[in-house]
Length: 463
Image (cartoon, rainbow, N blue to C red; front, side, top):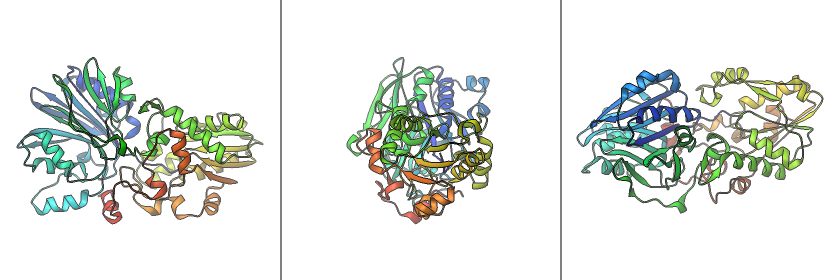
């Protein structure tokens, strides 16, 4: 991944298990790739909600004794990367609220494009905010709702906001789950021994031995309860599904599935489609580890070229997209990837990456490949040019940071030091992923949820 995207978060929820907290912790380990700044678990125990959260990775925040002490028969969990709100302890989730309708805790993945306007309105009405997250806007709207229960208050709050989101909300009645009306952010429903669970990705179900049931439909609101199972509080509309294309291109783990589609197979087909659209005069194909390796495999197979391990990734450096700040990203890239000279010396290289956003990684890699003796470096990107900001949960709200959006293609090629540079087409993405539609706003500028860029840009600014 050349550009270091920042995905919002991962969420999980389960009911009806005496080991709910331990299962949630295990699920969060599998969702760690979605956020590495903070982690948290809220549990329901005899009508009371207990919360444990902190800054850092899941294993740094939770130890076995901590999880066991949480107890409870229902739980939600969260791993976070900050899009709205800075990386601070108070912004870690879940957020806990005591309201007149009862206690609840919220875990959120995504971004609410009108959160700033809603926050300003609430503050004028006397609301006092404790965090800088858009999630707290939902909490205040729920607390002020005239609904008769928390499920109604949650639906009331969502009806006043828009964006790309997936929520897990812990209440005394169980776990509420919701996905935005266009299904931009993912949420899936599972079953563990007759007890329902929800997660951002199916890899969380695999980690705890749960079965995948289905995707939560766009706009659907569910109540998960131990005795009654899954109750649909608001129906969804699968015809409006515009799952973020970057879930399949980069964010999701390759062992996850969406709608029955293997992420690994989808990425391999992206590489095959890229080879059809933009073949390269190369002797060897290299993928940028790890997320680009399936695309490189597909690219090499389509052109009958060898794919070799020419780039080595340190297992002890996290995804550079997780690191806030450009200087942190650049130092992370230098620590993370090295070249195997014997693979590239005297050879023309096709370097496959899944995207090019800020260009940090790619400039570094082309230089390293040339220093290792590569005669040519032909860069191929298994997604279109990233031209427009995302306002639905990816931290690219600043257009000036988008290297492909502010630079012409030939200038971009020179800037990253490549002999040639080609991108997959937007239609190629749709053909390769096998889904009829995606949110492709970052490529095409066609936003499924109307966006006031000044408002939405501010909503994704660390405060």
